[in-house]
Every structure is written in C-alpha cells, then in structure tokens.
Length: 439
Image 1 (tube, rainbow, N blue to C red):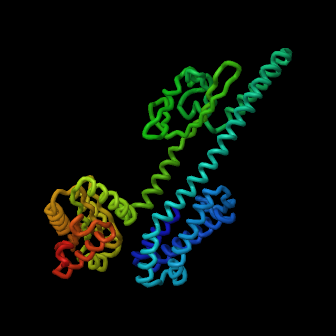
Image 2 (cartoon, rainbow, N blue to C red):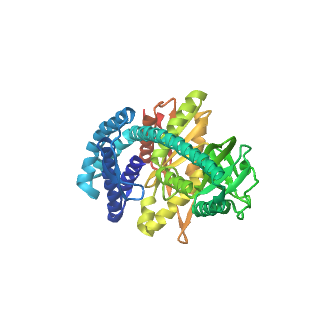
Image 3 (cartoon, one colour):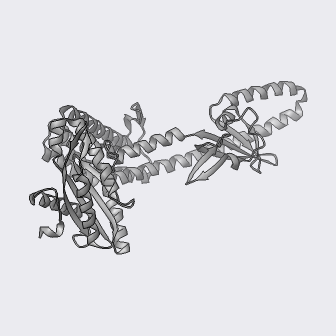
C-alpha cells in the first residue's frame, strides 16, 4: 500500500536520530510520493509507473465510468495531500520538526480516505478484469469442445491414422507434463482420471499416484482459502481454477492447481511491516488508531469504559547517551515485553516512536481498573533491566484518558492522554495523572 509506505517513511523520518537514518527515511518517502503520483496519473491519463518489483510498467487510462469517478476523486484528494507534503520534499531530510508534524497530520488525516479510494479503484479494475477472464474462459471452453468433437469425427473417418494419432497424444502428454502448473482432470463424481507430472509432484505422488483419488481428499476449503493436502499430510495454500467441460455426454472438470504459500507468507510479512513497529514488533501508530476506533465502537455498544494510557519513559535518553543506541534498542524491546505482560489479550500495547508507548484498555467496568493497570505499568518500568551486564533503571510518566467521561472521540482521547502524561512529568515524573486532573 503506497499510502501506508508514505506514512511509515514519514514516521521513520520523524523519529530518526542520525543523519544516515534521516536520509534513508527521506529517500523512501520521496520515492513513494513520486511513485504514488505517477501511478495515479497513469490511471487517469495512461503512462509509465513501477510494478511491485520496481520494474517499469505501462498502465492504460481507466475507461469504465465507475473507475474514472474513483480515479478523479483520488486525484482531487491527492492534490490536497501532495500540496502539504511538498515542504518535506523541498527541504529534504533537514526539515524541521514543525514541518514534519504538519505533514504527518495531513497524511494521517487523509490516509484512510486515500487507502479507501485506491481500494475502490483496485476493486473496480479487478471486476472488469474478472468479466474479461470469464468471457475468455467461455471462449476457451468452447474452442476446446469444438476441438474434441472434431477429434472424434476425425478418428471415426480416419481409422488408418490410429497409430499416428497415438503418437500425437503421447506428444501432447509430454507437453502437458512439461507445464509447471498442476493440471488434474476429474469426472463428474470428482474422481481424478488424469494428472500431469507437476500435479503429482505437488502432492508428493509418483506418476500415477493421483489417479482414482477423490478431489476433496486433495483440496479443501479452510478459512475462506483453499488448502492442498500432500501425501505426507502436510498442507499448502492452493490457488485452484476449475472449468467444467462436456465431451459428448461425459462431464469433465479441469482443475489447475498452484502452490501460493510463499506468496501468502510475503503478503503477511508486508502487512506486518506496514502496521507494526520494526524494533519491538508492537502495533504502530496506524494500527493503534484503527484498533482504538473499533474498540470505541465496542465500548459504546456494550456500555463499558475504555482507557487510553500514554506512557513516556523517564531516563531513557541517559541510557542511550551512556551505553549507546544498541543498548537503548535492547531496553525498548525489554520494556515492550514487560508492558505486554501487564495487559490482557483484548488490550493493545503500541509503540508510537522513540520511548513513547500507548495502551488501549477495553471492556473496563470501572475507572479503578485503569488506575490499577497504571500502577502495574509503573512497577514493571521501575524494575531494573540487565543490559550489557549492567543493571539499568528507568521510570515512566503516564497519562490516562477515559471513555466516555473525558471524551468519545479517538483523536481527543489521545490528546488528553498526552496532556495528562505531561502533567505527570510536571508533578515530578515516574507517576501517573488522569485527564480529569487537567481541569
């Protein structure tokens, strides 16, 4: 998702502590903005952009009315966002914190709208492609049926060419066996009658091992995806396409089967990188905000309390300065694990950047429960950490905002929790304060 890459790179530029990291984050941000701009322009007017592997690719302008409406809407929204991002592009990695904050606010405010519009555009294009593929498959099935009928007539009229035909069939079998995609032919009872070499290898059988087996023993649906079962009972994620053909009065089901396990793993990893902090593995700001909105809807429906807890470590900079950034990173990882152990599975612990963390505590039946967790987080932070064979101690300043008594909007709950955290720092650090104390 290009919009997510822009958000991530801008956040990395915001928290980068060295010139090298800032340049790297800026280069990623600048490249992503340029790629998003080219891609959107290509959808509107046609042009060259880059594919997922970085290679140039030409996109024709969208032609159907639905896609054009979505593309124009995305272009208008992008014009607003792009204008606010230009100061970052122009000033480069040396841009001030205020400039970055302004750009971050804009991209976070419009990120979901851009993502939604690009998803709508992708969906519209996929629907058009699906229709085209459907018609192509009908044409292919018709051509194959005509070829089979013609083959039968030729066999009846030219019996003397039987030997020659057998040689042709052997050659065809060799060609099908050379195809890397698994191909299986089943009868109307879903019994395998023929399979090419790739299909037998995919399922772990010899050249004739699949013949006579039921297709449902080889392929089944699990959680809206198809899984293939190998001979050793291991499974793989399968992409299955099926065509039903008719040869005279016989029904033939032609299945193509591809192992897409590696592709699914890559997609999961990309999702993890887009929505999780690379250092600690915790949810990042984007995922935290999505969960907060969903948890607020659940709290409203169930009439329960929800707490947003903003945590900033006290003394973290001293550890970085005295022991180095590697020690600081190790400390953040250890703190993350302790913070997670303080919460339930339904709660969320996210890292916002630097030494800032945010807790979302759901399904609370009293404000006292949030106070109790704040005390547990303080105890966890105050316990010594063993880093580089040295005992390291830090503290934590915590700000807590409660739904619904402090506010019902996600953005304002975050702001009040942040303000309460600064109040805790003003009160001497290593403590907690509630948003109600701000009045």
